[in-house]
Length: 126
Image (cartoon, rainbow, N blue to C red; front, side, top):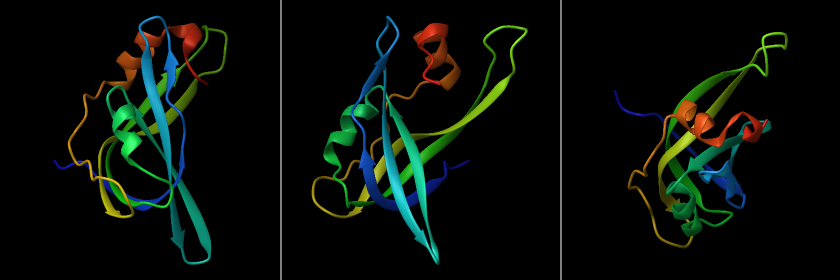
């Protein structure tokens, strides 16, 4: 099955953030999509080596991003409320317009649950 893609204009590129003792890295890119009367903002997370590939992007670039959805269950302890989180992990991107180089190679991806374990319970960013 082919991974899904999303198209949009780069609205925001955050700096790379590092979590935990093992140095798990992630970087957020927000795509903007104009859909009729409203604007949709789509956050895509790039992890590990994907963080560096985002250096090739600039705000205003139109890109197609191949992504994988991942969901997580999180509960601080048995007495606390269980929360569920959904994220879109960018696997690769292709520049459609704008400056810079296209990067449609896949990155070393990591299972989101492994990434959370790597970061440790105290380092989970929510």
